[in-house]
Length: 223
Ligand SMILES: C[S@@+](CC[C@H](N)C(=O)[O-])C[C@H]1O[C@@H](n2cnc3c(N)ncnc32)[C@H](O)[C@@H]1O
Image (cartoon, rainbow, N blue to C red; front, side, top):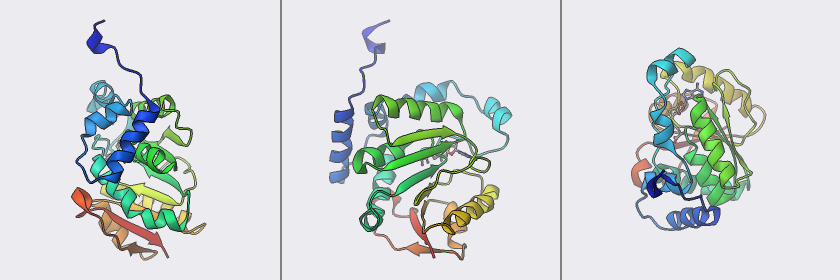
């Protein structure tokens, strides 16, 4: 072992200060550097995965990694600012959470309770390990297919283009069932937006999103 591969332990206070500083100013974010400060070893875990084995294990799913940039995550939390003021401490469920960037940011910046549901076991395990190392009690991750497992109840849902378009209708049906229990807010990006825009039980929440997310991040509320 050399000095280069001895990893420094993560520092929870420093990670929180970093997120607060990045949140306060519109400065660019170095995604791999922030992942490292949170203790996430994404490249290492991804290096052990291979597409054929994932296909074998999970069938045809959208399991490419593609975590959104922290700039989009920051924009998301700015966009739901009015929601956080209206209803303090909403629970957030990240459907297809990858390595949990939305969860880490929300837990460190807003002390939110966030649960991530992720198909690929190794990603959920790595996010859970890093959350535990940071002592983030309100941040949890679970391995599961969002179409098959029970969902933890939440008020805010992130659905960031995680599933193949064919699988969106059943996900929307499950969200609609949640919305019969309580008012919910859903955030989406990219092609998922079309499905949400067509859902009669949702209406779009106008936002003033800036930065790289401006063109595609949308918020919806149940009616
Ligand atoms: C585009 S990434 C987004 C990750 C994270 N939400 C973000 O935006 O940073 C989509 C993630 O959803 C996961 N995924 C795909 N299909 C899924 C399913 N049916 N149930 C749970 N997770 C799924 C993939 O493995 C992948 O990690």
